[in-house]
Amino acid sequence: MNLPEIERLVSELLATGDMNEDTRADLERILAEARAGQAHADDVDYLAALHARLLSAGAPETEPSGLSQAGDDKAALHAEIARLRAELEAAHRTIADLRAQIAPEA
Image 1 (tube, one colour):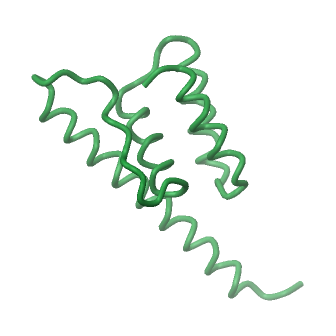
Image 2 (cartoon, rainbow, N blue to C red; image 1 turned 45 degrees about the vertical axis):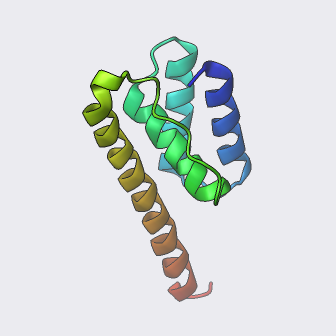
């Protein structure tokens, strides 16, 4: 995934206003590292999976971040990590929403 695409995905995710503080920090870190030419494959896969899960329902997922055919096993592991991270983020949002619903009104 190239820098303009990383910038676009991060921008679209942040524009939703639905990211918690930790996720915003992760997205900003991923973007800063990409701009410095130091993007990590697992971070890029996480970004693509999070974007696909939250904003691209039904759209084809972005291919893993350029790993070669010889790295198919690694690519599959990175994709699984990204999928699990996206699920975990969704679970954290659900927990926060539920806690907000049961919090006593001030």
